[in-house]
Length: 313
Ligand code: GDP
Ligand code: ZN
Image (cartoon, rainbow, N blue to C red; front, side, top):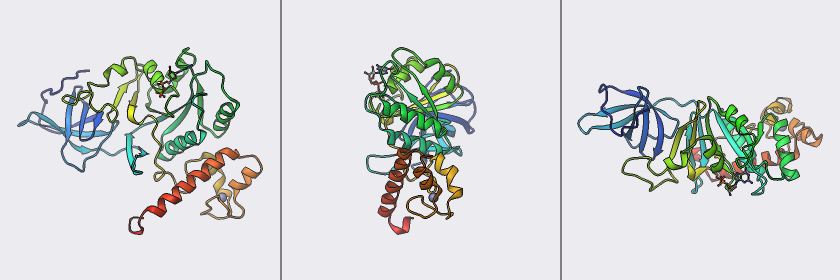
């Protein structure tokens, strides 16, 4: 893999490429022909993130690579920005790894929200419980069992002792992965184990932009066993955007399974009569805490829609 900043192009035609480092309109792209080059967006409305496929061309006059076109995305993962807007985090992921740990105290609502966001975007979800060398509180053990029962893959590991890391590597093989989770659960520690040298690479991402904006830079690393890992230190603990959740199921697999049995086709699973979801919760078939997560996301979604002016709905 060549990393020449301005390798001379073979032709002046467009070349397909993958975004491997992205920071605003600047990116490092890996041309399908092999070399990595620094490139800039050809226009203001051209927006891309790590994992995007693009068409690039070299402007011979200025000896500069331009990103001219965004190729269609298979999926996109959005977060809620500090200003409350939906902001693109990564494209073309196949797996979102949601990390939890006994400490800091797990926020299972946030875990549900990550899994829901991944499901709605068509991305697989894997909940990784880290710090297996520490005692897990009953709430975390139960929470993991409930997620597993809902059909979500879970795995217990320890970045410190190395337990479970081989199984994790096996699950990530060939995938395009991003890690998410509360601050302090051990995401950076796991990333260091999975991609040796990744920490050192941050800071010299883009020529002329060295180390200045490491928190807003996102980078795609090759996984040693095959596949890729997209990481952005600034958004590892992002809150997934609620706008992108499916209105009917909000990405809850239990709701998706039960909803066809509700009396009303447009049942919101709140107070409607003959709702299969609330009936399942009352009968203990659907976990009450998972349903509470569903309700909270539903409320957040409604609040958000009230704020959006009518004309933009
Ligand atoms: P991040 O904020 O999610 O990136 O978490 P870090 O990787 O920075 O880890 C937070 C703290 O947890 C650090 O003090 C790590 O040394 C510690 N830590 C990470 N993984 C483990 C683990 O498997 N076991 C234990 N006991 N501590 C861990
Ligand atoms: Zn219902």
